[in-house]
Image (cartoon, rainbow, N blue to C red; front, side, top):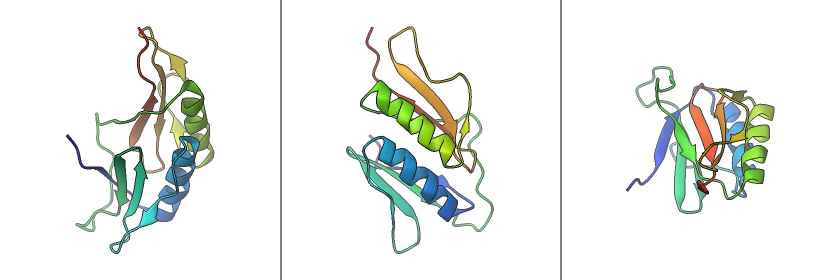
Amino acid sequence: MFTHVMIGSNDLERSKAFYDATFAALGGEPGEADARGRLIYLHEGGRLMVTKPIDGKPATAANGGTIGIAPASQDHVLAWHKAGVTYGGTAIESPPAERPNGAFVAYLRDPDGNKLTARTQPTK
């Protein structure tokens, strides 16, 4: 359904450190900059892009928006969360935990305030 998810950043170097670490925790590769300077992360058929806003105004996080990432395992969720906090992200909501449906979930805000979640598939 979607070709990619694009989020804004006010500091691409800081974002690169954060997203390189969190993608590595999921088994992904570091991001690469395209000709426009946007960071591109490819993993298991998905594409996340990080850019400075093209209108020149500051990037802001979507109020009510969350970007969901599908890790392979609970260990990946924990590694993703740890890498995110280590590289400038903020742990939010509850600590990483299993939900009643069996999914293992963690939440972070990236250094620009974008809300992210890593969530395994439900088992129940």
